[in-house]
Image (cartoon, rainbow, N blue to C red; front, side, top):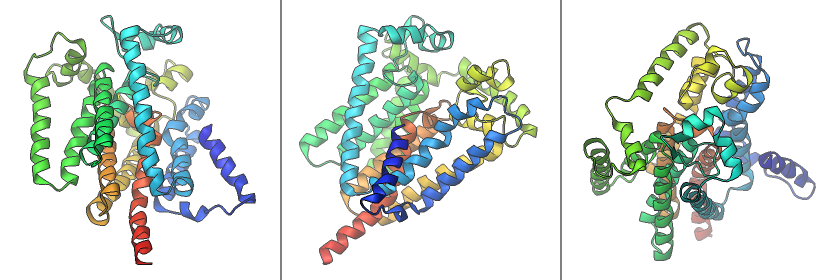
Length: 393
């Protein structure tokens, strides 16, 4: 609603001042519009059981994206917007952490308790009498991956911030986010910081940082895989199961993917957007896609849009991430742009990796955060060039 109203307000503001629509005529806009058209055509997929489900599910797939990217190019396109964005996201992260900590130690409110008592939610968020904290997010999985992303991003920003007050603030936000990730009980979220710091070490082109990063990542892996330290703590014990050799949930995922593979052999465009996952259970219960857990964003895209949709989505994300890396390696020189770009690119890569077994990239607010960030990174070379021209003048 907010995104739509912003677009409407922008259209009506044309009466007072000229809107720079040409700013949105860029590669990212064309790509997300093409992706939106593909998802729109899914409304006519003959395999789809429910058309109503499409109106709900397509938001996370494409609607948020096709609003976000052009609006960032037109409205949120200046260096001071980046600074505001970093600070705003930090305060939202703090709010999310505090709400999550309140759930863990003070309990849930009546509305949350009612939600938890629903069969599907109770079985996934109350495990062995322990709450998987979800804060004010849609579920614990989205909360965990979002906090893992924020933890990695703000830790990296803190490392490269020179002002001591800001360094301490961002480092505190990062550590708070990592704690929130832990209490979410989302095992896939551990992939976010592990992957993010790996990419960070590469993007910095600093062998010392690579060495320290490799040691840090190996230490976390060794701690969770080969020790029993902290085993009495439920949150640590839960994360440790992600590295267990006999992982029952992973075996179930593999079996479900075999079912999808057989179903999709003759369906290159999938079973229709909204036919699997929660929307499938709500609008088309009893069908194969609704009754088979996707347990991952890419598997959900594959099941609902087929191999055509999955390949298209992966190519879109790969193009944007690759372009961000090219900008970081060859275009950016100023630290105030370079290191936030490295931090955000690393964090988004982490979320993409975790989406293999979770719906990280398909849920709010992760979708808007990721595409806002990628769009801002694409503008950074222009900001540097503008500052250079001002100095010359």
